[in-house]
Image (cartoon, rainbow, N blue to C red; front, side, top):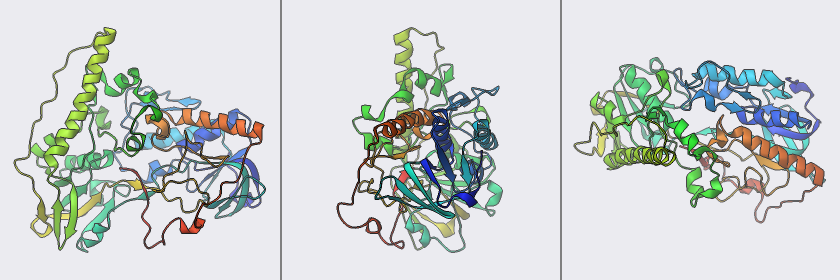
Length: 448
């Protein structure tokens, strides 16, 4: 049940969970199940990220059957469909209502420190709490990132980050430049394209995946292959995997491929990666063909794995012709003068970063990424939950965050029983010198 923010000052709990999204709620469910007293602090309201920072036609890119929050798996009548934004919001809010977590909304944590006598102090916008253990479930989408070159665009140009984009009508009449081709960039570009807008798209190196292959959703095949259960420790390049851009595909209108080549045939203008902006000129890398070919190669490689799996188990599945590129660039455009176009707005789909400056505990690497093993940090009693690839592909998603929450709940119980814990001290400098001054600080990248 929701608690009052007015009664937090001086409160002590065995566990404080910071963040009330799918990760924080999953953690709370596991703690409630184990009878551990705790409180969940949410800066906004449950499902705020989904309700307020997703565009109108947003939908999941994974089938509904993969929505498996602890004690609340998808029970609707369209398991192979893809929930749209408002359905996702309703799903999360129904989850919270289903077990009544000790949730306090509208409260932001502003500082986290260790206590000399053990445990932690959490300063918030309504007072100070203490806890024996803390779970940081604030998610990876904290700070929208856009390059500083954005400041060199003409003043009259409307600029939005993808987290601010809602619909084509939100933008002024004219052509639109979309920067970035991760999941958000490709889906925003498609949304504008389907609305009849002329789109210019700077294409990065994100991979793509087919929506369906040989009679099934590709996600179902990958589930059978064990891809979503593969732990990060099984990869030789774990750091690279954690920061890799997600494959672009969509669940819109029942789900389909996103084929940038087809969009080009229909009038979308494609360029390579954006390099710089100078005096009204956009500079692009000569890597458009390379990036399109690379995305296709990843998609076809996944199909190779599916073919091998079908052959190995002797499954009955229809054959399917492989993808053939429908368009190739005749030339690589490296410079574009804005004044020669009808571009009136820009959507920056350039990812998100983290802001952990409020955490005065040395558990970060040189890039500002939390050092952990399955969410367990080097500071006893401090945990992270909901990070991309925290343990598996599904760690930051409805599919796998519950497994991570159960694992951390077991660690929390184990530490309570053992009574373990020790100080973790700064080796050099001070907590406030770990980050540069605000004017120079750039959020460490989380996801593309």
